[in-house]
Length: 131
Image (cartoon, helix red, strand yellow):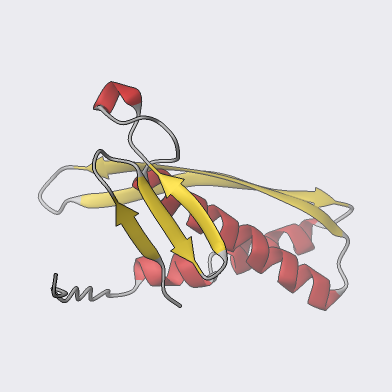
């Protein structure tokens, strides 16, 4: 999987993943043109979407009557002796589910691939391309 970001000046960035294209930008108040979500908003969206998709897949495999999922997530940087990136939010399940099913889906949401990526050790390497 590869996502390409291309910037031609300013803060607006064109993003491409396979056949899908979208933009990221900064708000006008931060000298951007507000033509897309900020990089932080994209990250939060990735996490929220992954959780929604993961629980939907699980519920379908189990044959549970999950008819919708709503995930809201926020982010804050917490300063201190050990700086922390903190994500807080809530998940809502729509459908005629038992309390036990809702609890299990809540547990499954924490196992989505993006959640695991953000909570595991991460190494980022970026080579300098010619040109």
